[in-house]
Image (cartoon, rainbow, N blue to C red; front, side):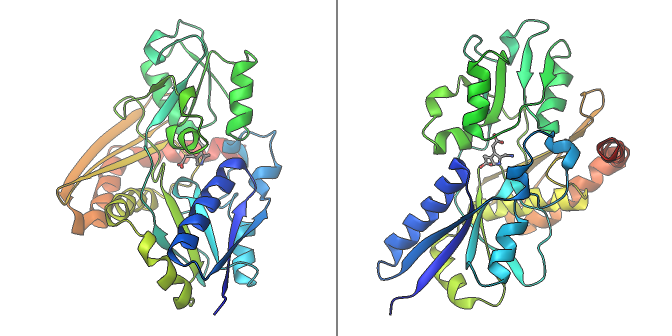
Length: 311
Ligand SMILES: NCc1[nH]cc(CCC(=O)O)c1CC(=O)O
């Protein structure tokens, strides 16, 4: 039997690394299989000059990959869980949650050691409303400027002197073997990560039992609980991927410790709360936390953010 499995992926270096990582794991598990990559560009890769928060739109980075799967040009798609919309189109589903990389945000600078060291007026690059909100809340004297592009482009802009520091997901840098560029890891108490940060998810056709079977050994149960709790919170808040929402679940001894945050992009109003409970209740805990946040006004904050993005 010489079956071919095709992996749909974006063309960025990080996306390619992630797809190649899954390709290598499948190849190792099933030497008789031919595993191929199907690289493609998405709308999110093409529109590079507009802040992501403005173009918003759910699934900016996944629509083309999903079309390829629906049309049978690919069998699976590897995604950063963080960039995935909360819902999937009919006929497709998130099947595999792989083991996660470090979930924290990374502080990257050629001059300063961490956020606390930055002088007033220093310019920090990020286009994440979640990062912006938390930095502005704790350090209102800093200036936040939009920073777009793939990881390499962002580092180049820092090195050219356009920013005093930039914030990136640690996981992306580590995967690209750029871990030495991480000046310091930002504690989750200072920057609560995005839901699913550092985790790879694999999307497949719902009716493709053969592919699901092949992917089973790549599942990580601990990470699945984490992702279940975090995504349930986001879903209940109706948050897309470009919103100032933080969600981070730690799993220890079959217990979930889920922390959540909703704030406005300038960090003027930030709501935090947390819940704990057994892993079997991961999803319910996410919903409970979302409702606690909504009860404290998270809905109004998010509505204002969405309205601004539409203008
Ligand atoms: N939004 C872009 C994005 N999507 C996934 C990652 C890498 C981190 C991950 O695996 O979650 C990044 C880069 C970043 O946030 O710095």
